[in-house]
Length: 116
Image (cartoon, rainbow, N blue to C red; front, side):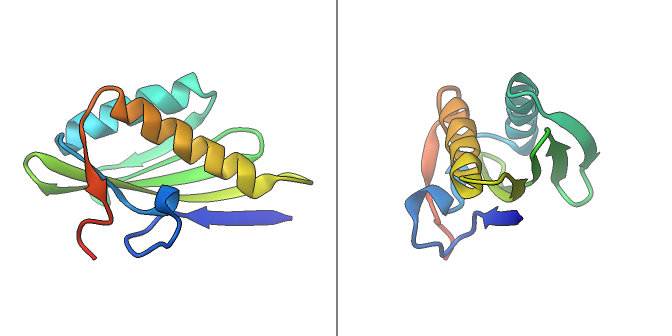
């Protein structure tokens, strides 16, 4: 059974709110690609026209939407489909948390859900 987890502006759970970083689109895109490869994901497609990166591993597919709000403010959101017998949403939450923490170790977090 597939579980869908997605981040967005007006989410009540803080982890699932859109995260904004003090960085450019290219900076966030490059660090995100590096992180997901480290996490064992294969990048299946990358589309700069739509600002999306689609990746997958054995039980989890993820579409990351990276949007440059200003030259030094970029947001990232995720749409994740995971298929596990048990705990599929926990694994998606863990993936999101890991990616956000690794980005925050390099770029300053400006805030969550800033443009609601």
